[in-house]
Image (spheres, rainbow, N blue to C red):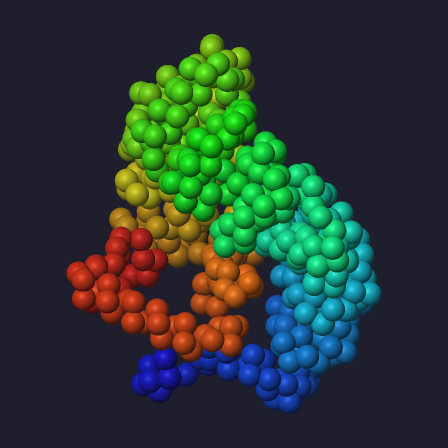
Length: 477
């Protein structure tokens, strides 16, 4: 980066800003505690009159919060409000993350009040940040209240809530209180939300010792846990050992097999369920249709979809229609998927449109891709998937002017792509990672290990798929 910059014959404002942003993204700022330098930059911001810009004020708050300069951070956030500047989900996210890290409950409540006043309480990212803040501040009642009011929940909100449930359960045991079947089933369900097999196995052992395994609530939760975590052998073993297997148990195992692409096993289990006289529900059919989709069993998927209404009296909901869109799209039957959508009693949701658009990218269908992208942007105007997936189709066809136009549209509308995230549990703590994340104290070791893995992949003959790279570059680059 620096080499290319130095080779440039002329440096303008764009090139200087790009260089500064590049160093900042590598963590050469507040993450290294350079708060004195940050204060100097803050002074320059005030001097040149940039303090009124939201995209300047937000990074200042992030810098102060990471450096632990709480008063300056807190004052900066409310100064933005006093000056009449609009605070968005990213601003609130930064403020609430700092409140949680500093266990500043009272200040966090004030931020919560601003969230309500500015109509951000329905925003999934702000809601997740509120749940996380209250959990870190040990205000579980408030966290639960926010969590229950959330109409949509993502991995952050589920993780914050579920981790706290497990912690409270352990505290309860340390105080000599024995759990009942309902409490144990609930904490195992929290392990399901976190995909935490290690702790779930421990609770399984406790269920055996306490005799609570015989309760259907507990055994069903364990089957669900093993199924979701991919331990299908143990899920099946536990399922077969159950004295009483209700619809929930059968559905849990069906969903587990389906999630991991075991289409034949899923369908066989579903037929066994029907043979035992049990009535499948809407969730069961989601698992069966998903299995057909992953295995490319289009005709069988049609049969099961039709049988929902005709044989079982279940009216399809949006999840079932999304499974059918996925079934047809994966099989490359995109025109058939379009016809199916046009016959639906209601339009698909964002997931349905994204599913179709993703398959259009895979199969290079620009016509239907443009239709799906436009429809997705109508449903969720600020969903970046519609722009990014369509950009990939244009890029694969070498239509760089269209790619540039979509990017300008994203910038003009303030659409930003949220970084993908994943998490692992290590030594009793959940570690969340996002794309290009530099905040971990072990970042150097993590990226060094990733570099080793990348070289091993290349040595084994791995060739990256360049068809959707959103830059007009030569293949060698």
